[in-house]
Image 1 (tube, helix red, strand yellow):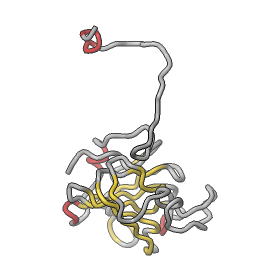
Image 2 (spheres, one colour):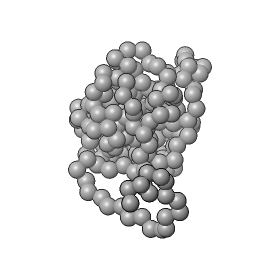
Image 3 (cartoon, rainbow, N blue to C red):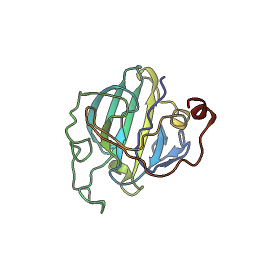
Length: 181
C-alpha cells in the first residue's frame, strides 16, 4: 500500500477505534473528528464512486485506488446549514466536491467530498469514518496508515493556480541550508 495523503484537510483528531464494539458489530474504520464541511481528499490516485442509499452510512464515497486498495469515506455532509438540518442530498456540492462526478479519476490529495454526519452518525458529531480495504478485500485498521500519511495545509483542485507568500524573519537555519551558501 502506498503512503497515503491524510483524507481530511484542516483540524482533525482520531484514535485507533478500529474493531471497537458498535451496535451492529465491530467498527471497520477510524473516525476522524473534524469540522462541518471540511474537505475530504483522495488518499491516493484512483477512481471515485458515489453511494447514496445507505441508512447507516448516509452519504458515502468509494475511492478505488490505483494500488488496488479501496477506501470508504462514510458519513459525508447532508446538511445545508451548520445547524445539522439534514435537508441536503447526497449530491455534488453538498456531500461530494462541487463538480465531481461518480466515476471520475482523481489525483492523490484532490478534494472529493465534504465531511459531515449523515446516516446513523447524525448525533455523533462531524467526522469522516474512513475504511481501508487492501485488494478490495476485508477492512484493515487505517490507524498506522493515517499516522504516517502526508497532511495537506489546504485543498486545491487539480490545474488550479495559487500563490503563497510567507512573511517574517529566519529564526533558525539548518546545516543543509548553510552549506548551500
